[in-house]
Image 1: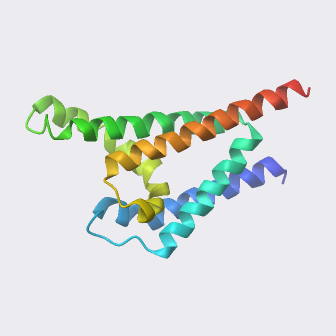
Image 2: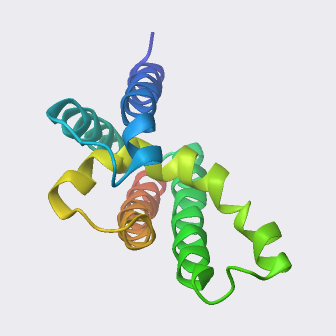
Length: 148
């Protein structure tokens, strides 16, 4: 098995582990406790994302781009929540945030144990992390292309 396939397998396992361990705390926050296991799996997944970003692969770029967009969508919808709560259009649009939240914010939710902020602001911070990793991925991809 080559290095890239091993890395993809490690990132996939870290993603699933982080998603499973952080799912209930992220859904019930702030009513649930974020424990040490949540922080550990978040750090493992974030570390795997950093290593993946340094490899500069296209599929990683797609994941990081959608994660950035998803974090921004969740934070914008959360910001509009108070003003448009009774609006029917808001009810329809707010449904967009849940898949993004579960797929991209939940695996990194263990970091909220340190910040203890609302999910909208935390989603914005996670979008920034995905953006930094995306830029790292793009510069690594350019370096790997220039070597050939």
